[in-house]
Amino acid sequence: MRPNQDRRRIGLLLPSSNTTQELEFTRMLPDGITLHVARLPLREVAADATARVVEDIEGESRKLADANVDAIVLAATAPSSRNGLGYDKELIGRIEAASGRKATTASTALIQALTVMRVQRLAIAAPWSEPVNAMAAAFIEASGFKVLAHRAMGLVSNLEIGALSEQTAYEQGLAVDQPEAEAVMLACGNWLTLGIVGRLESAIGKPVLATNQVSLWAVLRLAGYHAPISGWGRLLRDHMA
Image 1: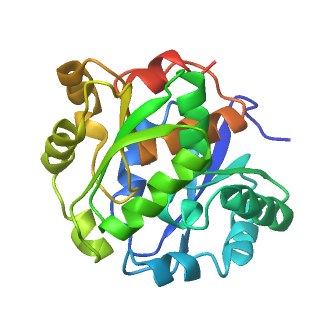
Image 2: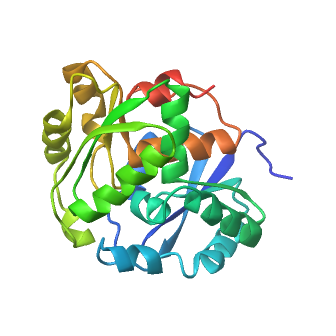
């Protein structure tokens, strides 16, 4: 039994070359929540690499279970959506079987967030390549939503993506937005987005979702945390319950 029953631990599975995710998760974490991380091998956001990244997902999940985490999230959109409808659930099954903990993925979290916010039509901006963006868009559409536009910056090196400024996310989000879109998604867990979510929501007058934001939202709820979290967009502020 833990000394403080209000304290929760969340486990984060992330690509090894990710340099921003721990920073963004830590910025959002409410009091009483601690972050515990395991890394999966990935240097380039390319089709073959996003397939190989999950090869040892069981081993890394077991390591997170050693820390007695309450829930685990694979916070990587491209690796969890690359094989179409149902692939995210397959990965969740592998994580849960290996760790004995509840689990989710970034792609699963996005679909849940769209459902909770009653969004049917969205636009997607991402820093990676157009083929990877098309795979993510296909997963979203197969899940029953309409992607009105998707825009990619064309980067392959994950270190280059991690070096991008938050302003690039703001500019790409503005550029991809469509009048008929009910939300804008900023996809990629290694893209700094957190600091501009509120500003972009104010500029376009609609919700902005980002990989790290939706991933934290989903894993906190799995861990039993439901209090509103302000400062990082409508999802965490209005939809934690």
